[in-house]
Structures are given as C-alpha cells and as structure tokens.
Length: 186
Image 1 (cartoon, helix red, strand yellow):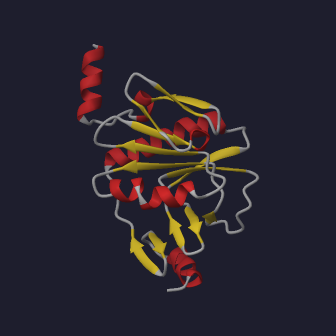
Image 2: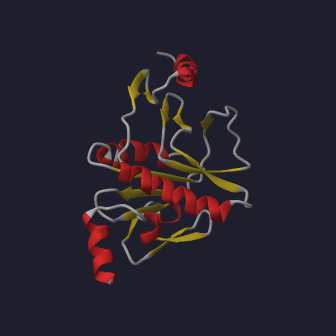
C-alpha cells in the first residue's frame, strides 16, 4: 500500500492504523489505566501550556517518523512553528510520550524509540509504565540516557519547562504500586 493510499484511508477509518514500509497495522484499544495516565498527563501539560507556543496533542494525532513510517504516539507536544503541512499528521514534535503495556513495551522501547529519536525536533522521549509506577525520560541533551522517576518524585520536562509530580501522572490509577504508596502515606 502506498503512503498516499494509507493517509487517505486513515482519515475515513473508524480504526487507527500505523503504517510501516507499505504494511498497515491496526491499533488495539487501550486499558483504563493507559487512558487515565495519558489523560492525566495531557491535562497537566495543557493547563501549564495554554498560553504558550507549544501544546500537547493526544494519541489520535498521526506522526510521520520517516518517509514510509507513520505512528500514533500516546501524546506529543508540538509548537506553533511546526512546519507540518497536513493537519492530520505532525512531523516535528519536541516531546513524545508512550504509555507502556505488556503488549507494546518491546516496540515502544526499540523500533519506535529509534524512529522517534531520529526526528531532529524531538528533545525528550517519555515512557510511562501502566502496571507499575515508573516514568522514564530520555533527553537529547544527555545523549538519550535514561532517567527514572517514581511516586513521591517530580519530573521536569525540560523541552517545555514544566515540572509535574509522578503522583499526579498516576492519579486514579489503581495498580499495586499506587495503592501501596497511598496506603503508606496514611
């Protein structure tokens, strides 16, 4: 399938698909925890970026990673000076977030990571576990070395100058780490 055929079909499809070198892959639905984490982070970022030149977009925004690869990251931050010409596809995010599950972890940490980090505009890649409370951030400035954050800590997203707490990212998520952390606070 050609890129043009994929993009045309994707605008009419009820199901999201990723495109990798001529092959089309349907995207599976996401769990409640995945949706809460994505939504929480989107809300935190939106509130702090409302009047700024950069803003978050959710997982329905297609990202062109190479000439023949298109992905749906869970969240991207794009800026007003983004040169993407298609209103359904972005090409120049400064930050990309993926929420990890057992079924997506390998792809998000390997092939998608390689694609995302090759995009010149990307300054940070954030991986958020849904089954345990762990946030991993990789920064271009540190040659993509991982930094890890846990409940009780704050995460600074340098590309947009925002600090959020790990606890706020996991608000209402009911995994074992969060439940144990909240119990210990009492």
